[in-house]
Length: 301
Image (cartoon, rainbow, N blue to C red):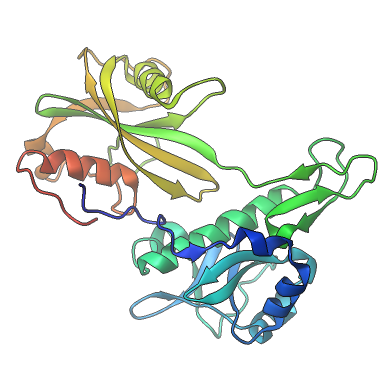
């Protein structure tokens, strides 16, 4: 069994789905001094250090920035009710408590359970910001079920919408002592990563792996094996990691999504070039696990 933990993953929050329909309990928890609140501003989360830790607030701390109709119940975190609070402000709020940082940074420095909590909060806050109007009739919507759904306010419509995630495959393709990596325009110089792409309607995950690798690099694959998954709240992807073997070797950039793609040996990857994916990503876990196959070892992420 692989010994690792994908950043942002983990069942650290007891989501208590049955409590979402209990308005009285939600109101009591909202006002309880035991509850904690996760503020999200400009897509960023509040933390302070050193070492860095997520800053969880009390109701009195966030009251000026909080509208009860925007209640987002996350579940129980460390045995305390936890709520997300989206803050719409031109300037960074709550600065006396800490600093707001991008999760691409915080994910690599927070404790695993805190990274999971703030990723959950960020994803739901952004979902609410994008669902203020009904996709069916265009009327305004209101949060329901503790912020875990939205419903159209128009009586003749009443469409209920639930949070969705966008499934995306990500795969390390190997051929003997080589693996296939690509880079996108705009990435830091020398950075390469595994092949990835969103799953299309009517497509299985395995079919998506085959299609994405072929479309981006012209490489055909077989023996597709599931590795692990990672919630990726930028804004709402679920990365589904796979390993696969190549049955062809000639690289051709078919759909122009990549700036470059190459085969790299383990020796090359261990030399410092190319630059590998960031450690908080499942892409890096896929690469590290492939590298460790040479010695039969596994490492924590």
